[in-house]
Amino acid sequence: MPGDMSWMKARFDELNDQSLLWEPPTLEGPNVPRCQMDGKPTIMLSANNYLNLTTHPKVVAAMQDATAKYGAGSGSVRAIAGTMDIHLEAEKKVAEFKGVEASLIYSAGYTVNVGLIPALVTGPQDVIISDELNHGSIIDGVRLTKASRAVYAHNDMGELEAVLKANDDAGRKLIITDGVFSMDGDVAPLDEITALAQEYGAMVYVDDCHGEGVLGEGGAGIVDHFKLQGQVDFETGSFSKALGVQGGILAGTEMTRTHALNHSRSWLLSGSQPPGVAAAQKAAIEVLMSEPEHHARLWENTNYFRKELHSMGFDTGESVTPIIPVMCGESSTAKAMTHALGDQGVMAGAIVFPMVARDKARIRTQMSAGLTREDLDTVLRCFESVGPQVGVI
Image 1: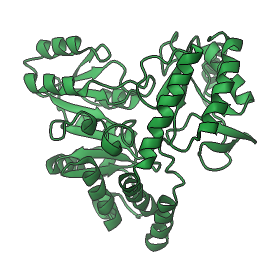
Image 2: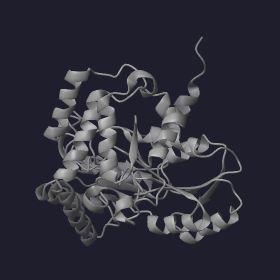
Image 3: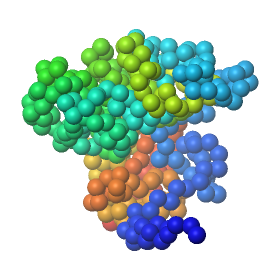
């Protein structure tokens, strides 16, 4: 007899009653601004594809050519026999893009955090100091360590300093923060964090998943945005957002790369990136560096869309990036708004508990360089129509 699984049904009913179920739609083609979803034409506002690179001809061609040359997979983990020259070429391009000595590419942004964070501390004599709104992958990485832990209020530099003072006698001190916070679209004050770290002898770890391709000169990221090259110890990120491919990024010194390569279990024990993916990673960065118009268009769309939402009376919270939330309050309200927008051909997902606090549900819109002004105006008319229906404006 199989085990008793009735608890799953009870949990399902509980989530359903609270409007907290995830019901992902189905794409029937590429994830682009004008896509086909659940059988109908849709304008996509819920993708991380900020620069619209997932279908860029140079990125697609690089993947196809490398697959034909190297095969569909590498045949091993990289530490044993799975490292190919195309992997190393991609890592050199990442280092050039980030303005650092070296980089290491992981299977995903998630696996960077769960594999690297435990390799940076040893035991309770060390302390990890984390922003309260850090991504779940950071939280999971911290949970895998034996270090002491402290949390400071979101972007509160006074509280961060108090925590640093309280842990002045700790061994290793590691401050971890998201660069761009994925639910609110606000930015960590990395300049102030770095200054405090230097004052109190702490290391700085920033997850720049939503900053790459978005912040900084030409999209080089949050470290470049604050001009802190050489002052941030661990800069991590992801290819699956603005760079339009897949994979995780660690950027820093050559010693940082060597340490991670030898101690990070999620890198050591994961099959290496398919060679086609590695080639696409390199190509995506080359496109971003050589075609700055994608980055410029992203910000044109961002500034226009946020301004128009404000003029209608929508609350976009603390956003200063292409992540633009429309605050709804209750989960049921956010769900109702998502469904109403979907009926008009707009995909804008509801973000509800536990991703955000129970009373902080929102529609999270995400801008793309591929959205035209006509697309944005169509979407804005939908928001203007739906907002009063669900009581958001």
